[in-house]
Each structure stands twice: as C-alpha cells, then as structure tokens.
Length: 465
Ligand code: 5AD
Ligand code: SF4
Image (cartoon, rainbow, N blue to C red; front, top):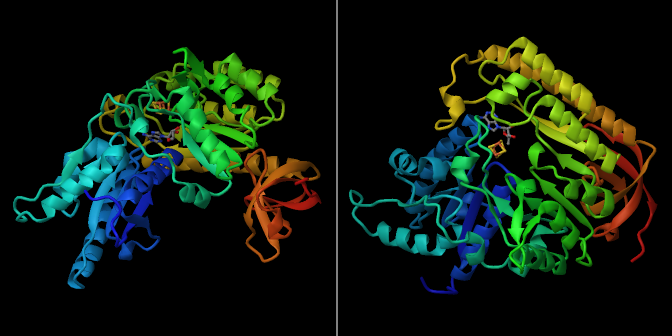
C-alpha cells in the first residue's frame, strides 16, 4: 500500500459498546491516517465504513446485521453514482462470529477482531485486491487470531490533531482481556486472556496526551484493576502503583479508571484514593447480583458480604467516594428471593449511578448451558423495579450535592448560549452560566440545583491561570 495518497479518502467508523471500543476506533483511524484516510461524520460519503461492534449482550450483536443491511443499500447507491464503498466489521462480534458474518453478509470486505487493528492497512490492501476478483471467487479478509505480539507496540502514537479533537478528557487503554470467566460473559472469549501494557508505554502515552492539552485521563481495561504491567526492572506494577506514578505527571489534573472487579480492589489502590488528589472519588465496581447463590452460579468468586466489606474499606479510604455498578436481572435460576437480595445490596450501598441489564444468553459461555431460564415478563418487571430504586438513589445523590461547592472541569459550551458545561469529581454533568473562556480548567462551582440528569451550578471563583 502506498503511503500518503494525494487524494484523501473518507473513513466512517461506527462504534458500539464500551469505552474500550471508543479508544480502539480512535486507534483504527490513527492507523489509517498515514494511508490517506480522513474521518467523516457522514456515512453516505465514506469510501470505507468500519463497524466496531459489541458482543456483550444479544441486542448489541443483532444491531450489526441490521446496519449491514442498510450499508448494502448505501453501497449500491454509491456504485450507481460511479463510486464505491468498502465495508469492514471490527470488534467483538467480528471476533466471535468471523466466518459467520462473511457468510451471512457477503457485502462485508473485512472481518477482524480487536487484536488485529494494527494490521488494518495490510488487511485493507488485501481486501482491495479481492475487489478485482470474480464475485464467485471473492472472499472477505478475515483476521480473528490472538497473536503473541503486543498490538499496542504496533499502533502508531496518537496523532496530535486527533488528540486535540478529543479535547480535555481522554481514554487510555492500560489492560485488555479478562481471566475471570464470569459464566454470563463473552469478554474472556472475544478479548482473550488478560494482557497489561508495560508501565513505560502507559506513562509515555499519558504524557503525550497531557502535552496535547488533555487534563483528565480515564484508564481503561475490561478488568482494569487487575492491571499488572511490567516496569523497566521487569517488576509487576499494580493499578494503585501506576496511579502514584501517573500522579507525578505535571499538567495531569484528573485520573479515573474503569471497569474494576471487586476481587482486585487491593490496599495500594485504596491508599491511592486516600493519598492522591488527582484520583477522582468515583468508582465503577459491578456486583451483578446481591444473592450469594446467583453470585456463585455467575462464577463471580465473591459473596455479597465480601463486596460490602470492600465498599466499607473504600469509604474508609475516601469517605466521599461515589459508587456505580452493573446489575444483571433474570440470570438462570434467579428466584424472587434472590432478586430481593439484589435490591437489598443496592439499598445498602447507595449508588450514585448504575447500569442494569436483563440476562441474555451468550453462545459459548457456561451460562448458555444452564436450564431454569427466567421468563421475559419476570425479567422486565425486575428490571423496572431495580431501575426505579437506582433512579431514586441517583436523584438523591444529585440532591445531596446542592449547596456544596465542587471543582468542575469545564469542558464545553453549554446547551444554551452563555452557558458552559463540565463534570464534577463524581462524574456528574454540571451546567452553569459562564463565558467560553472558562473552558479548559477546573473551577470552583457552587451547586444550586438539579435537573433530570445533571447539576446546575454557579461560578464561585475563577481558577487562577
Ligand atoms: N447478559 C446481560 N448482561 C450482561 N453483561 C455482561 N454479559 C451479559 C449478559 N450475557 C453486563 C454485565 C457487565 C456489563 C458490561 O454488561 O453487567 O458488567
Ligand atoms: Fe466479563 Fe466477569 Fe471479566 Fe467483567 S470480570 S469482563 S463480567 S468475565
């Protein structure tokens, strides 16, 4: 493939699912930029469309096939006008169903999993060669291997202009994959075994983000607090230790991480929350269920009481910690009493926010072989009850902030003219009257009210430049 084509081509990436996919999509556009691809927000104009897919729940997978139907039509329109459009399916659906996608949707030129992104330019060249084949011989380029080599080593460093486009906050993947094997979850199969990036790589990427103006970094990993990257002396460094190292980077003002597993909340990480001002007091720590028998069937390897004990330790280290979680209702065998235990643990913890899902069977996971499925209407009713409780907790949490003064990283103009918006340390959206000059720094904001999903503030003091 030739470098730096004169005529730029348009790339459209549609990202589904988690923040890890958002990060990966940025890396894909970074990898294609030297080959003349520039991102567009208009799918119909694209020469290359990539769907970066999510396989976590059934609904997420289904969306991919309906989108491919739409793309087939768009491609037909482009060809009728004398143009063309190449189509690639990336991400976890691609990893899990590679051949099946190519069979069900012959419109697809490339299918590749999350470990193959650095090979994208090469795959694209091979797919372009396929285009000249007779339709009966044309085959999609498929790459769903788990290579030994480290994909991060081969990805180009984020281009400066891309980083700037990302603004004041950025994601940084430090760990990928998972060895926990919760019985409902596809991640260990689609993202593979847990791999941590070396400390030097993480610090270098964080530094370049900060140099490009980023003030807040969110460390990403499917099981981020299982991080154990090697340092220069080949010593394994934990997430807590990494947080202390990142806190040394001058100009980095806020640090977050997601998603964590309760079993990996170690003392160093707790102490980091106690010691480091930049480590934000917001923790996404899924428990999934409050019933010990369901937790056992889910292979979570912790009980409800153990989870509560961890919450106590976290609150001792950082009393204002806001908590968030994930919940699954209707796991096979879940009784009314099991579900009541889930409501109880939610009541006991008091979440600032939470995500909740109806169990959906994922092929290839141990959960797929369990009998005693919970009927759909029961799942629906449980989900509504759970969401009512969580919504009430979120509202109460927002209300508890009224009257307080919080540091807010002002990130963007607000919805109304004359307004700006940003985030509190607890990840709440905050809107306030103020000029665009406030954007880019942390300002003290008095919280004077709440609206549906956000806080309303008043500028207390302009931060010193
Ligand atoms: N069904 C429903 N929810 C699931 N999740 C993961 N797998 C499934 C499944 N098969 C939820 C879990 C996880 C979140 C990312 O998605 O709550 O924490
Ligand atoms: Fe999936 Fe469990 Fe790993 Fe989370 S910890 S990614 S739910 S297997």
